[in-house]
Each structure stands twice: as structure tokens, then as C-alpha cells.
Amino acid sequence: MGTFLGFVVTMTLLFCMAQGEVLYYDFVVKETPIQMLCGTNQTVLTVNGLFPGPQIQAHQGDTIYVNVTNTGPYGVTIHSHGVRQIRYPWSDGPEYITQCPIPTNSSFLQKIILTEEEGTLWWHAHSDWTRATIHGPIIILPVNGTNYPY
Image (cartoon, rainbow, N blue to C red):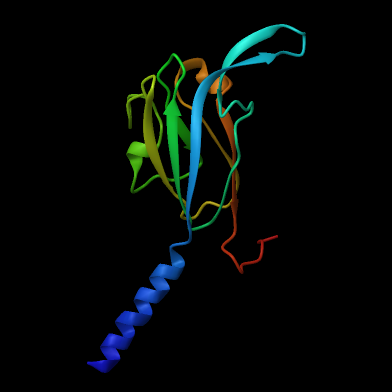
């Protein structure tokens, strides 16, 4: 019995260590005035007033929660391009396929579980033309203590 209990405790500790960290990001989709290279002023949708949007940085095995608040005039969804959403397809972002758009003045908490992903990916809006201005990088580093494969 003691050996079995030791095995269970050891496996539980290993499982907890393998889960990685839990990270939180806040994205506010809003209209932002920008000046284009030609000098023309234009209002576009951005995340947190940034164009391109904010960087998400995590390690392989981490879980990321992104609270997306939509204050813009159109419904939007956010897709983490290249991330396998096997256990959470309703956070994947394809509009009307895995989730409905986030309505104006509403929020949605996306859960992103990084399993095998590593390197530089990107997140972007998955709603009509909004993907042109709502996008940003996802930097996924190797597990802490692991060397880069190159």
C-alpha cells in the first residue's frame, strides 16, 4: 500500500509540474484613429489601441486565458493561428463554426492550451475584414530548462 501511495503522489507531482503556468491577458477591441503612411486619417478596429495588437508570450505547456472585451461596432472572434484547440474548440475563433461572434459591449474568456506548439505563431480576428487590423504575435518558448532545438 505504501508503494502505491508513493507512486500516486509522485505521478501527481509530475503531472502538476508538466502543466506549465496559467497566464492571463486582457484584450479590448475598440475603434482607434490612425494616420496612414499617405497622411490620411482613418478609424480602424484594434486591440488595446495597438496596431498590430499586443504580443502573447508563453512557454510550451502553459495555459492562456484571454479576456476579449468588444467595444467596437461589429461582432468579432479571435483565432490563435497554429494552436491546436483539441479540448477547447469553442475558443478556436472561426465565426459561426466553433463560436458566435462576441457582440458589441460584451466579453468572452478564451482558453488556449499550448501542448506541442513552439515558436512564433499569430492570433487574428476571424470575422470578415476585421482580421486586417486585429492581429498580433504569439511567442511560444520551450519548456523552462529545455534548450532550443537548433
